[in-house]
Length: 214
Image 1 (cartoon, rainbow, N blue to C red):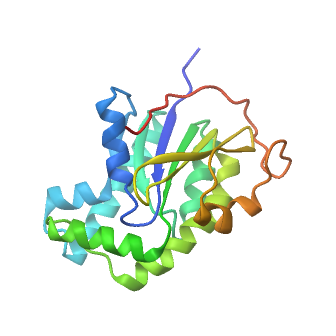
Image 2 (cartoon, rainbow, N blue to C red):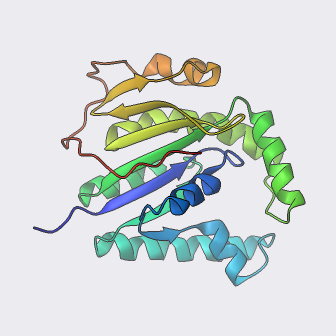
Image 3 (cartoon, rainbow, N blue to C red):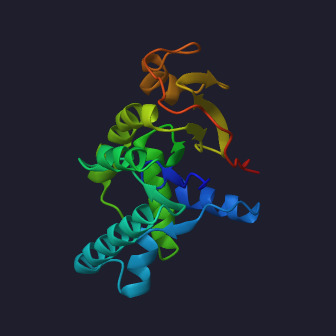
């Protein structure tokens, strides 16, 4: 029997801490498959501030993802969960019998995200315009609600101060582990706590590799 392929998705607004969460998993020896990261591809092929380089990197990432999905290979990637095509990605993964593990990293406000991005820029990282962060902060929250039913497991972290697992969704049911204002206000009132009928999964839940932020 062929093993079911796994897609591990790290999601959240710019500056939330998606990349750091990935490296925490790496440090704990968890195999997340091939890494497809647009920012890293951009830096490897040219100037990350150049728009044409960014577009080229995005096209490379899309091709890499297509190859992995066609060949049913494990992979991981980061996303802000924004844009018109994001739901299509999750639907495509389900259609190709992928196990989808989503790790969503949230912050208490767009301002916190902007401050994190400023710190990143000061260290030589890429910048994001403030108005885009404002837009993506709320859009990522709303799209979380849309893609959650397609995922086998959703782990939700608050990284306003330090990484902390605050909720998980398995078999469509929300297990709220800690009350956090941004999550309660923006998300939890739209996800029913156990038992849930709105968030039902097609596949029976099976345990996936987990890691615990230190």
